Each structure stands twice: as structure tokens, then as C-alpha cells.
Image (cartoon, rainbow, N blue to C red; front, side, top):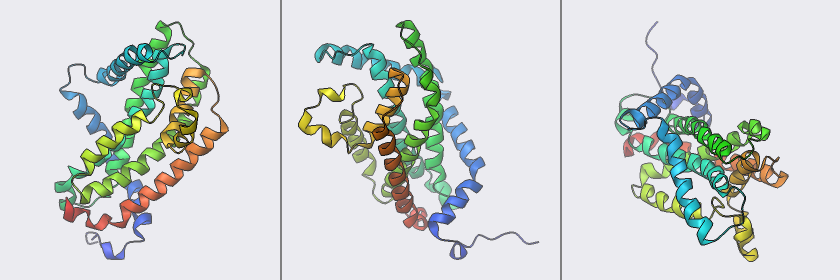
Length: 272
């Protein structure tokens, strides 16, 4: 039997083809996740522990600054901030990694065939590993402060799936733009900075002027932070509004991102 030849003209519709190939190359995705984790911490003084220390340092700074500057009346404010940071960091780091990994893979894509979406999928997988590791210091801080570890944390896989799908969609959309336009990465980093301050990560929604609250309802990360915080910080079942909104934004983000990414997928090798 002769060697199989890849014929791009004979493939199925781009979106369906990419999805089937993504499943076919699942071993490559796992290898990319493993490589990302090993590479990131190989020369690090703290190693994998940095994943746990980084959100703690951010929590410490935000707690010292905002708890005294605005004097929010929030019990265990450090845990409040950390629960929001865990969700936000997963989203921000995963989408940025998806963008960077695709751009820096130009030489590889030009030599051999594999679905370009593996980089976005691997970025989400790496982000999930980092999120799981970051939950360890959260639980330790909870015990140190004498707070309660809520049984609702066992439900975390449900919202993590939702924010993961949303993040994948955003990562695909931003990556598809970054391939064609070099200034997308610095622009996206600026957008991320503004987006974080427009998300109730370190302040309660009650601190927002009532006439502006409706704008926050259009921020998908508002719902994911609220869901995550309800489960790990408050020990409550998230509201139906947050769950339905989070699910809707996740589906919309994925469908839009998948469409935009695959619309020009054949041309990526020419730009990278």
C-alpha cells in the first residue's frame, strides 16, 4: 500500500474537518501541554510552585491596596480577591498563550501538516493544569484564615468547563487575527488590562454605580467570576442568571471563534 497523501482540496468543510483533525491529533495536544508546563518551569527558581505563588502575590498586593483604599466591607477579603483572580488568570493566560503559540509555530506549520487549532486547545489544557495547581494555595489560605472549605467546590468542573469553552473561543478568534496583523498581541494585552478592571475581580458589584451595572451584565467574565466565587468563596449554588448567561456566552464565543479561525485556516502558513 502506498503512503497516504494529504489532499486539502478533498477535505470536508473547514470547520468540520478541523474539529475531526483536532480529535485525531489529541496525542499532539497532550504533548504540547506537557511541553508547555515543562518549558515554563524548567529554568524557574520556584518551578511549578510559581503557579501557586503568583496568584498569592497578586492577591497580597490587591488586598493591601484596595482593602485600605476603598475599605470594602467584605469578610475574608483576601479569599474574595483570590477566588476572582483564579478565574481571571486562567482566561487571560490561556488566551495569550494560544495567540503566542500559534504565531511562534510558523516554521513548524510550514513544514508538516497538523490542525492549527491544536495550539489553542493545548493552551486551554495548560491553563486547566495551572488552575488546578492554583487551587492548592487557595485552600491553604482558607485554612490559615480559619474560613470554611465549602463542599460546593466539588461542583467546580461544571463552571470550569463553561469558562474553558468561552476561553477557547476567544483564543481562536484572537489567534486568527494575530496571524494576519502583528499589532494584535500588544493591543490584546492592553484590552486584557482594561477588561480586568471592568470585571469585579477585586471589588464587589455593589461598588459600581447603579446606572452602570447593566453594562457589567454584558461582560462574560462577570458571570464566570461570579459562578466560581459562589462555589469556592461563598459556598453557594450560583444563580440561574449567571449559569444561563455563562453557558450562552460560552457557546457564542466558541461558535464565533471556531468560524473565524477556520475561515482562513488554509492561509495561515503563508502569513507565519
